[in-house]
Amino acid sequence: MIADRPSHGYELIKAVEERSGGNYVPSPGVAYPTLAWLDDMGYAVIEPEEKGRKLYRITQEGQAFLTENREMADVLLARLSPSARGHIPPPVLRAMENVKFALRLRLKQETVDAETIEAIASALDAAAKAIERS
Image (cartoon, rainbow, N blue to C red; front, top):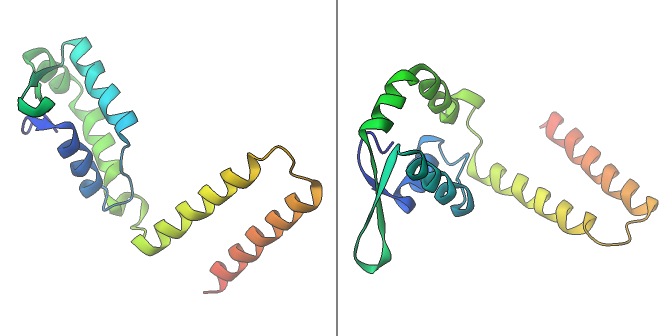
């Protein structure tokens, strides 16, 4: 993406979100280390701007690497397309994330007895059946 246009990290996060139709939004904990790695490898340069912002620009080495690996890059970018996996409507995506979050919170508690585990599994099974019927 920085080969198309130098960008700030936040702009790149939003561009990935847009390309994926909202199905994937990289966290800053994923985006910024990746951009730092590109800088470390010499594939991108970081240009500090006012107010602490950083502009990421591809280097000649980065452009050469991209050219050599264009096919793989195109495959990866195609995976971002909403049509690649089928578009997940935002309300459904939100609900899926809520279930994952609730499961993580509940299962991280120290004591999760067998009865609770069975209740959680039953609730998930019931939800799956309801989804299949709708």
